[in-house]
Image (cartoon, rainbow, N blue to C red; front, side, top):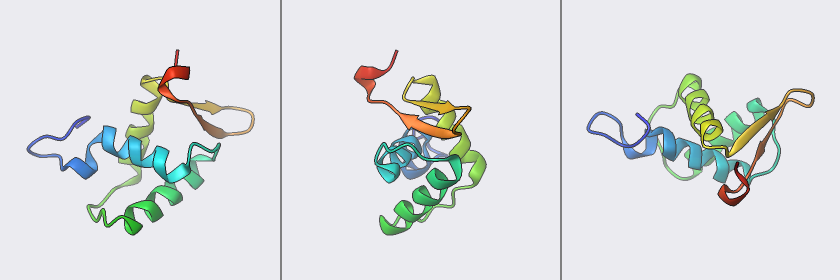
Length: 88
């Protein structure tokens, strides 16, 4: 689930989807809805046609959070991305 397996395609693995989120947003602060829309656009432009439900996107954000690569500011409701060197 986190990494590609026999049952999880490489483009749907949570680490891959997390990387796609980072690429799609350009590491700019965005709302969750903006990140979701940008990810869908990015996947379409890059021919990643495997279905991706919102809950899978949310799990990918959880993985990024667990790795210390994304935070959600409760006041502004913006996701902010960090490089790995900036992560705790």
